[in-house]
Image (cartoon, rainbow, N blue to C red; front, side, top):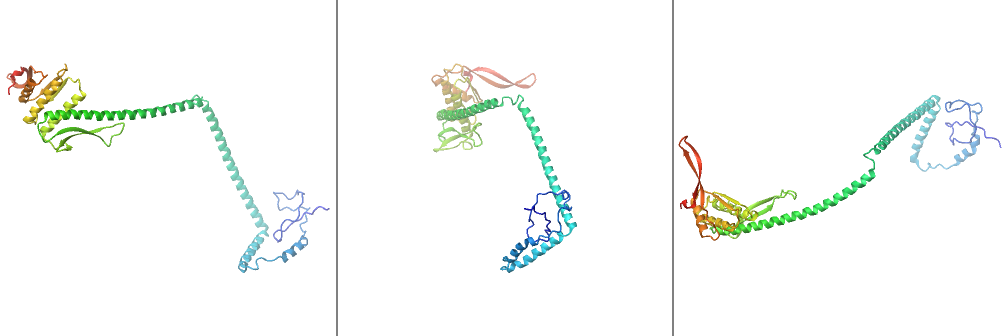
Length: 366
């Protein structure tokens, strides 16, 4: 069997496949850098048309699939014209050389892009290596030494603090509930004292009783709870706000009664109770009832060694009322003297000065 002879194909003139035969021989003349050089061992005038005659005959006898579709004739003509233009361009050696140069430049640009991308990747790799080394050095420092044990210790501490917060929340709720109950209980006891004192002191018939009503403010929070207190009175069986609905004397009497009730509830061992002008705006009936209430308070505190009632007033008749009530009250002790504060003029310099004198209780005039 003879070795196949190398062939040179004119691809721009051939309508059949470009590949016909092969050879394993290499040329020392036609090289990648010299694609247009001619090797003397190759017959460039060889014509292989006869060898493909049978194949051409088969192609001529083949059925044209485009005969049934008249609409595609125009497209076939356009494709043939484009092929003719390409063949015409391919036949020009200068044009082929220019196309080859363009292809070479394109390949070079692609190579440059790949090299640039490779350099960027290598630079990023080097940067990551440097960062990795730095992180390793940091991990070797004291702050990160035994980091696993430190993490476990902190995790345990966090778990313990979480349980403590839960327990504190339960404790807080319990204390808050206890304070609310204590507050409600104290308000009830204070109102009981107010009701009793009011019934013993107030002589009118338009107000049955008074009491303190507390309500939590809407703007207050659980951590900073605040209450709003109001004094209400029972009038004709309905509880209404006492402000702007009572006389000045009734307000004065209510304030004294509330203070006495607070003193009885929170100051079980309080030593001094001071009243400044307690009879202001009070009529005679309420003066008498207030004197009776104060005497009753003195009788209740008679067993307390350090209790003292101080009344500051211009109403000497009220003091006489209290003296008379003390004389007829069981358990009350009559005061032996009182202090009189007067304003006098100094004759030497015509200036006024205050003078306090101690006088016996018998000097009071009705």
